[in-house]
Image (cartoon, rainbow, N blue to C red; front, side, top):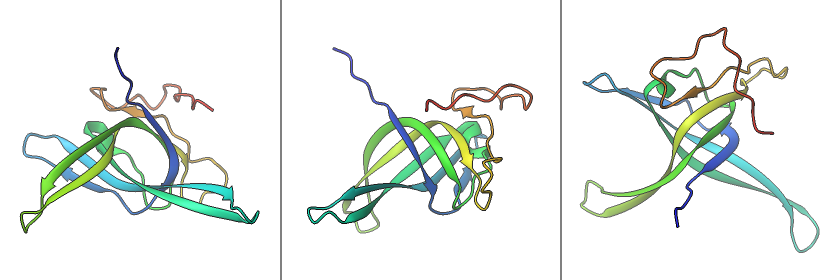
Length: 138
């Protein structure tokens, strides 16, 4: 039986993204994304819980104009990996390998006018600015 590895997140960018350019012309973007959930505890009081996600995107996703505080939609898959730190200790990290981003709200823009069409990581070029935006699935 085949499996499915699909993640959809809507949250706030935690810090300005880091963009790296490689010698072969490739680009990588990485940033943290905060998602929030509210629930009632056993005493009936509302509690807020924030989860932080490490987001990584490649290619034209690295050209996306996103910044700390922006609210974005991210679609991708979960990837876990390990690496050695400078002391030789094995460290583990879980990341969301983004396949697309959609701007929902630009920081400081309470009108929602910051919506833009999305880029998909498998596109060879950014979409034409006159093409219709992808619809959000909600």
